Image (tube, rainbow, N blue to C red):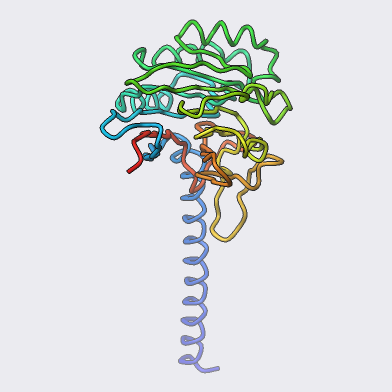
Length: 287
């Protein structure tokens, strides 16, 4: 091989090596970007989702009812993310705040939960139900009830409360956790058709059991929206019996159900294309 051919061969080899290194660098940066988004940025940047829910239960001209729904806090500390969530909730001036379970993963985190609850707007009517994790951490329902009551929440365990807001007759029903079989369908018996009937339940798996009732809207969580969304691939994290109900609205029969992506994480402390969610519902008169 003459010197010219040797130079050309070394040049081609260098170019090939450079392209390989450039490809490896690109893939590495891409994966680092995904890791940064999944494990840090996305879990700490909750997104506020706005929805209008028209109903004939409200007369034309009546003031809309604003409901904020939070789920699956899995709170460990009252840090910047939790303070941001509270700030966003307060900005929306809700009439009702609904929490649908899984508040802490360890009883040692209850002080952080109390700080969070205490920072929510005192002017709103506030309701909560328990989730599966809440029954597994050694805290009795009576203790949760005491904690929630301290901050103006009514903990609904297979019970309901009827009230008037802006001259709107509303009934809020709360199931105890469906995923561990603690719900009781007697709680939705003999509901009034004239009331706006709002059902809170941690897990959406009860949806098929309430098709013949008088429920208007069901709010649930438990699924975390799947946490990891890769286009074209099924959601990474969905609990058993909820794979039909990942996130968003579902309508099968009369009641409409909304499944919240939740705030915290479980199993894997990451989210990808599935940010934490603050759901805001404006209940408005149907046109």
